[in-house]
Amino acid sequence: MNVPSSAQLGLLVLVVGCGSAEPSPPPEAPSAGPQPAEEDAPGACAPIEALDALDPRMPVPLQPMMAWHQKQNMMEHLVAIQRITAGAAAEDWEAVAEASALIESSPQMQTMCRHMGAGAEGFTDLALEFHSRADAIGVAARAEDGPEVLRTTAHTLEACTSCHAAYRQQVVDAETWQERTGSAHDPAMVHGAH
Ligand code: HEC
Picture 1 (spheres, protein in one colour):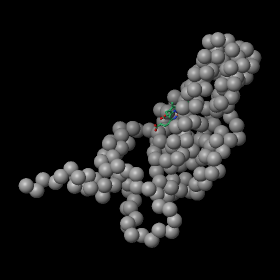
Picture 2 (cartoon, helix red, strand yellow):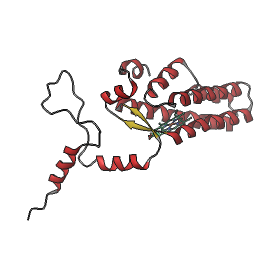
Picture 3 (spheres, helix red, strand yellow):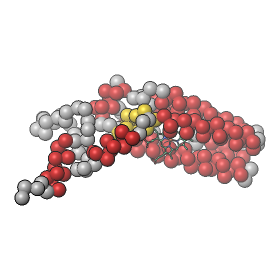
């Protein structure tokens, strides 16, 4: 009988691609440089599209390296909060100030946030607001004011949770990122500095 094999079905999915609105370039296009690797596994698209349809948050377009970098930053943010609360419980104000310094505002942090939020309106403002809330944790720690450390930490966490409620990552290729942000990506500029 002519039942298509799963390999044939897999090929079909591969040809259709990951629901991108843009047509993929013809395979024989003359290449003027390194081409992005085709990393999508066959059959990976439908579940990704299903997730996109379920998640109503605003997408933040990021290239894969930026998305991974953002996730690493996020994990570090959570470690900072962990250390702040442990320090506060032990009334070790120096430890609290050291930990809060990891999420405080700095020129590098601001450059990074502008870069990450370049394709999502409002994202950078929330990010900068988050870091400026975190500045107050160090001030309270240096004043050895425990209740104020907790209040400013809660205020900072509110900035984490409201951003998470509003935005999600959307991993895109370099061309799409440039289209959405109107900027060129120089990975060495930001990612190398970390
Ligand atoms: C300006 C926006 C913003 C702020 C502020 C923010 N985050 Fe995030 N965070 C994100 C986005 C976007 C993601 C990716 C969500 C997704 O999976 O699409 C994320 C993901 C995470 C993740 C998951 C990382 C992973 O491995 O997938 C953790 C943990 C996290 N954030 C912790 C924090 C903590 C803790 C704070 C505050 C101290 C914080 N974030 C503040 C935007 C933000």
